[in-house]
Length: 254
Ligand code: G
Ligand code: G
Ligand code: NA
Ligand code: MN
Image 1 (cartoon, helix red, strand yellow):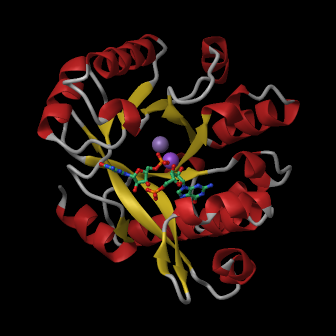
Image 2 (image 1 turned 60 degrees about the horizontal axis):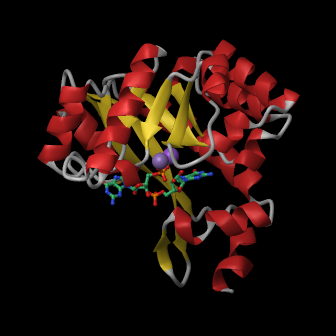
């Protein structure tokens, strides 16, 4: 109840913030990207993760405004890093299915980019499988406009949803993110190991990059490196960090 009743005021009260988790290129060990992950600094409950409020925000429709705030804040942050002369990275943002269906989504993206003097290749748009599998004309149109802008398209939580491989080919996603549930028990779990390997092989053959999520151990890193995984995100490298801490990490490297 504290969540539902306060959510409508949270944007006006400026209670949302973004944390940033680095994405590291396995071959170079360098930070080449980050994922922006929303947090809500709730007036009485403290810092809340998305699991506590995103579903309610979707049900109530607030997710569209919240998502527009995420787009604006992410672009402002990219511009801050740029003005500090830090290494250029791609920033991934998560878009919910509801937000993806808004007619003005691409206009909002373009506006936030141009207001901050950025081109589209600064952004990496993360959507779940269900979003890209929806064959609505508007979805196809949105994806094409985002790609024309130069933004990357990543399929989040890959393997947990319902994908048609022909859609993957048609939409030409730039990246697949192997869901954390398939990563956590490699290399000891043989089924998960086979799934992770299959996703990496498929992505390579379709010219997509693979990001492994939730990498926590050196054993997982070694397995993924041997299989040809491109990028890694996980506690082994860093947890999602407040902007200042991430900025310091970007400045000194991992
Ligand atoms: O931050 P955490 O690590 O707990 O993220 C959990 C989930 O919340 C992730 O799967 C992510 O997709 C989702 N999420 C995080 N930030 C955002 C956001 O800004 N918008 C939407 N729609 N989902 C987000
Ligand atoms: O978008 P998505 O739900 O995939 O967001 C990633 C989620 O996974 C976030 O909630 C983030 O905090 C979490 N996460 C990131 N790295 C790790 C990790 O190494 N281990 C675990 N358990 N969770 C992680
Ligand atoms: Na995500
Ligand atoms: Mn994910």
